Structures are given as C-alpha cells and as structure tokens.
Length: 194
Ligand code: IMP
Ligand code: MG
Image (cartoon, rainbow, N blue to C red; front, side, top):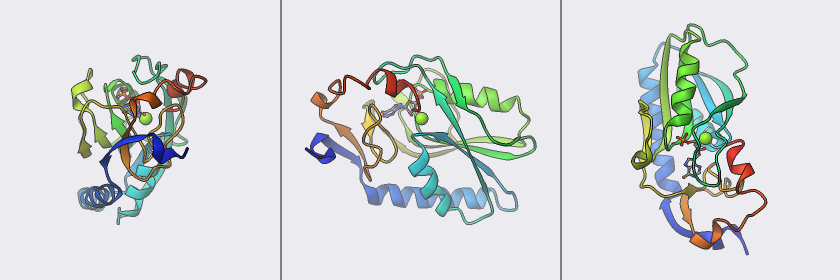
C-alpha cells in the first residue's frame, strides 16, 4: 500500500499551489521593495511552502525558523503552545514575515505573534498557505493568504498526520479509516513538531 491509497480527495492540486505561491511571492516582493524582510518559517509543516515561496521572491530577504509544540491530541489543538526551537537571531528593527502552513484555531500564531512583538521588530506580518477559518478561536491577522479551506483535516505539501504524508505534492484529505490507524504516533507525534 502506497501513500496514494490513503487519499480520499485532493483539495488543492500541485499546479494551483504553484500558481498561488508565485502570486504571493510577487506581492511580497512588491510590498517589501527596498527592505530586506526576514522570513520566519514555523517548523515542520511550513518547510515545503517556505522553500517554494522563497524562490518566488525576487528581492533580497533572509530566512530563519522556529518550532512549536501545541500539546495536541490527534487532530485537534489544545491551545497550550511551547517554543521548541527559537530564532537564531535578533529581530529588533527587522521586517518580519511569519510563514506557516495553516492557521487553524489560530492559537499557535496568536501566541507566536505576541512573543515576537515583544522583541521590537520594525514590522510583523503573517503569511499562511492555508486558512481554516471555520475553526478559528483566536483572531489572527493574515496579511498573505494562499487558500481558504473548509473545516477538514488536510495533509500533504508539508502538512502531516502522525508525522506522515508531508512529501505529497498536493493538499488532500485522507480516507476516514486512515485516521486513528497509526496508534503509536497519532497522539504524541502530532503534538510535537507540528
Ligand atoms: P492552530 O490550531 O492554528 O494553532 O494550528 C496549529 C498547527 O496545527 C498548525 O500550524 C499545523 O501545523 C497544525 N494543523 C492544524 N490544522 C491542520 C490540518 O488540517 N492538517 C495538518 N496539520 C494541521
Ligand atoms: Mg505548523
């Protein structure tokens, strides 16, 4: 059984991702003309998005990463956020763009923004590939949004279920029977390194 056998529905095909990310890259390049933004990727889910977005940005920019853990159980977020890996550099006076795969409840991004704000960036914006608005608990200002998606748990293009499916080239929904099958990792792995 390959990864593709677990897929129920493709929500966003590869070409659509590429096209939208190109647009986001162009917009960011225009908005930050003459500045040198620092893109902060949230590990691990944002790595594919980040690397493709970066290649669509045509102005000088820099890169850093943070990792968070949400202590979640399975496919839901608990709201308690912990920083597992902090930035390697100061963001004081920098134009920061936080890049994440998906804003779901908004709890993670809300916490991150509050934390980063205390470090005196010149500006602080959010770029999210996916916006799952129906699930929002905390308001998050999304300055650059890839796609709005319905209230479904999605995987692929960096997003995982129990650590798996990140290497799919598209965003998709898994067959219902797939969730809960991975008994060893579903609880613990989904909470760490989301
Ligand atoms: P939050 O609920 O907005 O705090 O989302 C926290 C993190 O949970 C996101 O950055 C994702 O890494 C992960 N997440 C939320 N929804 C999904 C999903 O549908 N698929 C995979 N990961 C998700
Ligand atoms: Mg994440």
